[in-house]
Amino acid sequence: MNSPALLYPSISTPAEIAVKQIVDKILSSGKMSRQDHNLLTSTILANGDITEGERRLINRVFDHIQTGQLKLLDW
Image (cartoon, rainbow, N blue to C red):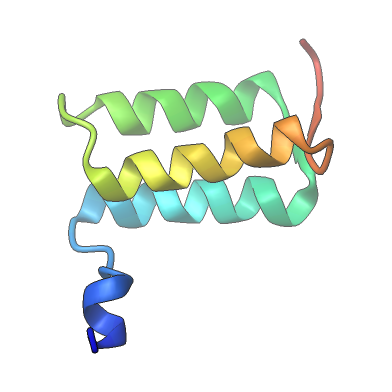
């Protein structure tokens, strides 16, 4: 059987860590403002490529929006 480390890869780059911090802040507050969106977008695009880890983090935000768990402010 696969070890948990292989099933759930760790965050490996400084950019992913920054994105995780932003996503965690957004999800814990239950709200995302335009400023949060701009910060998240600029952090993700700063290094040019989106990693699989960053993609998973972004998808968490989308999932919360779709399920109504995340409120969009100032849109």
